[in-house]
Amino acid sequence: MSDTAPLTPQAIPSWIRVRVTEGENFKELKQMVRGSRLHTVCEEARCPNIFDCWNRRTATFMILGDTCTRACRFCAVTSGRPTEFDVGEPLRWDGVPPMFAFCDPDGNGLEITQEVGS
Image (tube, rainbow, N blue to C red; front, top):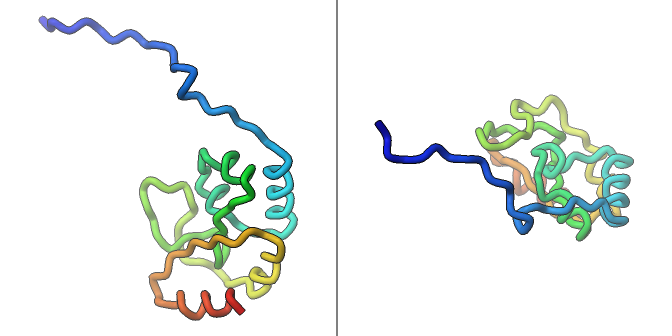
């Protein structure tokens, strides 16, 4: 026989709840990303902080499409080998706040970084 009482569920405290707000910045950035056919880690990974970041006009973009070459267990981004490289993608970043994330198992990061910077 156990001396511990069964746990009873309690309400989540109000201070831990996050208010989701789709402000004007969020809507504008979402429209820009969708209209330019860009891929963000925010959307692909289903990040819970997307509303906060996008309302501050900050987004992390994936280069080389929507597929990551890594298979992190905690991440919701589709993993596998990228099917093709969209050479026009960097041209569509115009007007988008730049912050890029990409996995580089093949050592092509320097070339890609130089191309993006030019």
